[in-house]
Image 1 (cartoon, helix red, strand yellow):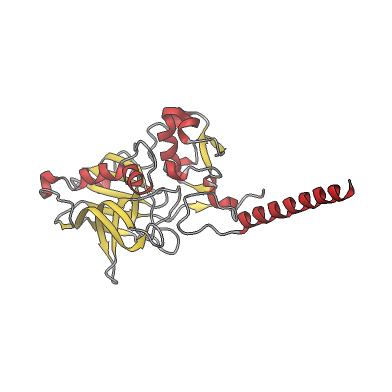
Image 2 (spheres, one colour):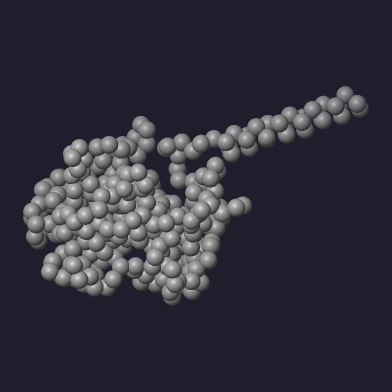
Length: 291
């Protein structure tokens, strides 16, 4: 009996060591650039969107909601998931387990939420005027000063901020892709559907408003990204049923065929495009919480 008991003890020890190794490897590994979106195991606070301070939310009432493995925006909020996504400036692909969202105390408070003014005096003399507020991570489209479209945006992150100033859309490209960045290390160039160019810097790098992922914080290399779940479905096969299509709506409004001619999908320069104003500082981020 003793040899058998010793063998069983050894098995327990070996299983324990192997389990410890796997857990240690999982915790210590740094997520790879081509991994699917997932919570950071090295920095829990990185995925806490309640730390991002938007001025428009100062008087609003919300609390923290930690996303568990069984949760999704749809399962938590039903048809109101769209408003929660907009309130947090996040898409469904990035509302993964481990993320902490701002959940409104009452859903009615965030329905039709928009942090930009319904009327904007500097835009009054323009037929079409785009205002991008970096502090709010939000874009508004105005016609003669009145807000027509309002949508969350992801501007340049610290170190690669979107340039401030007043510009004009000078090109459109329905099927644009990045010349600098890829979806993965060995994958396709990053898609930039519904692209509107508003600036070229002294290094001849173009800055665009375009479709991209929205992770709930400033995230780009300087461009301005908008919701487009059709692009995500095409590239990442999620979500199954695209709903958030803001980049398509802005593109159709800003550079319609009725004004600029038929759009065959290729890069086209345009004249007298809508004005684009980029203003503000990036939102303040609160210090990490203690766990």
